[in-house]
Image (tube, rainbow, N blue to C red; front, top):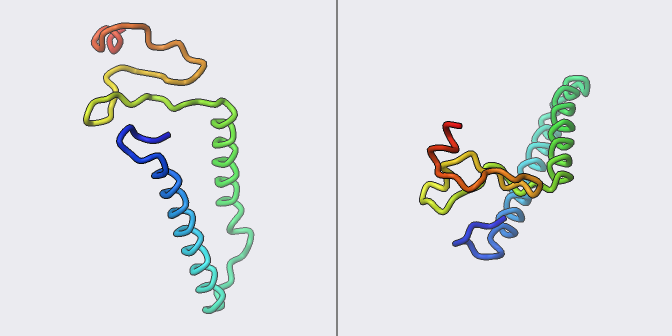
Length: 105
């Protein structure tokens, strides 16, 4: 999802640049570990691998739900919404109500 003022290809450029940066960092780290002969016991990596698998499963569930994102951004300069707004495709909230009544009730 792009911001209203951002060019259409800005997200693609950002994701490509970040993917290249992270891949280069991981490759440099792997080379450094190999060059200095650092050995890591694979059993020490199991908790980290478990957390990464959990995060990947949560991401897959989020994509499966086809959620647009909650809470939504408003057109204000801060980018924050004044109500508990949900823009999920299956969500009917909020009803047409002013900010104060939606926050108190």
